[in-house]
Each structure stands twice: as structure tokens, then as C-alpha cells.
Image (tube, rainbow over all chains, first blue to last red; front, side, top):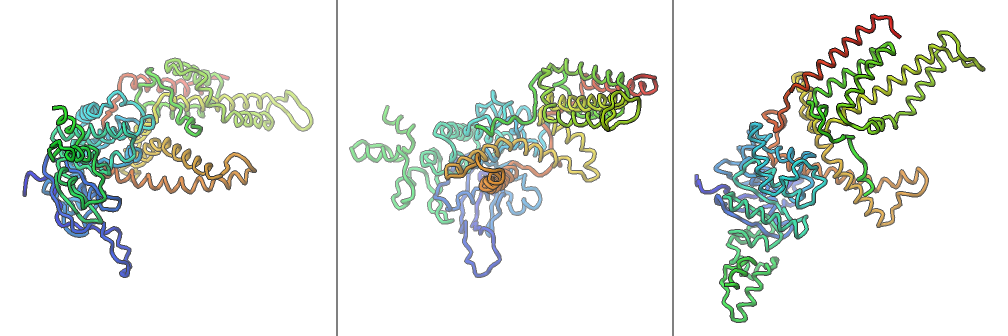
Length: 280
Length: 270
């Protein structure tokens, strides 16, 4: 067992809902996908709608089980674990979904954050401590007594993140967490994601936004259920054959600067780094 | 937003000793109080019930007009009950007689008695919801019902359902509002027409609402599973409720109250 790998995906294929009719051609949502995620890594998964990126995400905490192949989380096979205690996997790999409204359980913010730790049987005082800590981490402590319906989309999504953090997972999977938010909400969520990563947690971010993917250590590009590319952001953005992707602003800016004779290093893919480089 | 203005539950926020009581204490005391109203046989014993209610209201610092609001929807029922008692109770001495109707002193007594009982019932039960947050109520119910889990009553599941229902009422109201606006934009008319037309106009509202309710339920189930939900077994709670001195006091007061009520039945009172 490689102890520095938190998630190992080995030759995973997945077919949605076998309808029992042998004449219907089986459409694979995932087609022989393999990759590993190291502890503490920040991986972005991109791809168009129906590329299988959400499906692969749901495999990482046993919400879906592979039709063939296997998924190991911290050395545990998800297929075996889901027969006895799938929550042993889910407490290691937390998941934040797209729609902030549909993932909050309680009508009081702090009770909602406590939901996860309550489920895994954490003692009361410890839950209290974790809830406060998680709410502070997402800057929502002062809203702890409010009802979620009084909060903005971005704030609700931060509560959802706090709910996952309170379970203290090693790895957090974000399934398009910013898709339903306004630019301000998106920025806030990205800040928190980077904060989590800097704490040493493994982060897997599924997104449509290349600016967000650029912050990752590695980008996995999915298409038609297959893994197309698995490379650092700079390499992914330098490839022209992946026409579906529109490169982030910083990358196209760097390209234009290069055309005009300014030698911008190839690994500059975020606006922050570009600004740092240009201000030197 | 029009639909959003509906206030749900009628919790009156406060920090009074009554608000701070354990929800279980409040549920049990309210139940005892409601049952006691049916045991009472004399006006003087009702006096005791009124005094107790008045004291609790005073401690809770809930304005009286909030409590009396609860009467509005059933004022008609109260009046009807009183009239029926007034007209059809033929025992006792006749006070007024015209046409076929006799109003007797026993009738007047019964009418007043029933009216008072109904009013106290409403006040007693609304005081519970006014001083207890809906979420605390469901928690309290779960704990009260948990002994019955042994005989197969799904106490945890019931409480979880109530919690989720409370949580999603605003979400579904928002959804209704959205669908309503979308259908209005496409020419649907929810305001005008006969009752039948209005009822028909609701179909294009209800069908999408149900579809989206199912979608939300699917999403939520997935999110709950992802957060390790696996039923009530092995669950802990963040808010440990424990019986405090206030709760003990409340029970002592209730015991004295019930004792006095029972005692009053053996005294020649009116």
C-alpha cells in the first residue's frame, strides 16, 4: 500500500442504470479511468457537461461504486467498505455539492454544521469545538444562530463547507461548488478552498472555470468518460488540441506578452503569479 | 416576496426563564395543563388554571396580543359551541323563553364554561409554541418518544422528517414563487376568474413544484449520505439538554396545580 496516496482509481468504468434491455447499447459514464491523488495535493478535474467528471467525484466517497475496476481510499476498497460501513470512507473524504440550498439539513446554521460530526458519533463537547472552529474558518461564526434561508448563496455554500470540515476529513471533494454563485461568492469559495489546501488537506475541485483550475497542482481533463490529460496547469493550458477549454486570462495574457518579446515563464497560469512576475 | 411573508411556527424570541426551559419539560407541562382543563368541573378551579397561565405568561414576557392571536382562527368555533350549549341545554330553571327556545341558567353556565375551556386550551398550547423554537420542539419530541423506539416507533426518523420539513419550507416557498413568476411570464393567470378557473390555474404551478421537490429530495439525500448519515444509531448530539433547576421547579408547580385541582373536586365549589 502506498501510504502517500489518499485516493487510487484503478481502471474504473461505470455504466449508469442498466435498464435490462440487451438491445440498448451500454453508454459508459466512465471508461477505464485511472489516476492517483497524493496526500495534500490540489487536483482540479475539468471537462464539458457529461464528460464524467461528477461521476468520478462520486466514486471517491463511495456514493457510486465502479461497475468494473476499483477505487481505494486510504487503502480501503470502496466496494468492500460500502457493504459494511461506507461512512468510514465518507469521514475521510468529504464532499461539497453544487447547489448550496439542497445540501443543508437544519434550519439553524450551527446545527447544520454539527450534522456530520453527530453522524459519526463525536462526543458533544468535541462537536461544539469543531463547529466553532469550522465556522470561524469559513468566516461565518457570527451567523451561527441564523436560518440558512436568510443567507446568500455564497454564505450557504460556506456553511456547507464548514459542515464537511467539522467532520475533519483528510480530503475534500468539491463538485462544482461555485457553479450557482455570483462572482463575489465564487471568489470567497476559492479563497476557502486554498485555505484548506494550505492547511495540508487534499483538495479535489471539479469545475467549469479555468481560472479556478489554474490554482491547482494538477489538472485532469475528462471527455466522454475518458481521462484525456493529467498534467500540471501550465502544460494543460499550453496544449491546443483540447479545444473545449478556454484558457484563463493570465495564460492568454502571458502568451501575448511572450509574442511581444517579454519572456514570461511557462508556469505562470494565475493572475496572482503573473502580477508578481510583472511587478518584479 | 409575497409567499415569503408567511411566518411559520409562531416562535416569539426571548430569553425568559420559560424560554430557557428544556423543550421536554414544556411539552409535558403543556400536555398536563391541557388535560387538566378537561378534569376541571367548577369555575373556581378554572380560576386556578387562569392564575397559573397568567403567571407563566408574565414570566415568559410574551405580549398578550401575541397569545390572543391564536384565538382568531377559531373564534367562530368558540362562539358556535357557546350558542349550541346556550340553546340546547334544557335543564335547570328557565330564564328566557320565546318561540321554541328556552334559555336556562344551566345553559348559560355550560356555555360560559365551554367558552372559557376552549380559550384556555388555545392559550396553553400557543404558549408552548411561542416560547419554544420549532427545532427544539422536534428535538424534545424525539427524546420523549425515544423510549418507544424499543417497540418499533421510529422516533429518530420522525424527528428528522420534521427537522427537514421545517428547513425546506422557505426553500419550497421560494421555488413556488419562482415557478409562479415563470408561468405568469408565459401568460398564466392566478388572480382572476371563478374559483374553478383559479383551481385549474394551480395545476401548472403544482406539477413543476412536485417535480422540483423530488429533485431537491434526491440532492439532499445524496448530501446527507455524503455526510455519513446512517440513521439514528451511533449518533451523538451537539446540544446536550439537561434538566436544570428551572425544569424541576416547573414540575413541582405542575404537581401542586394538579393536586389542587383534584382536591377542588371534593370541595363544594361553583
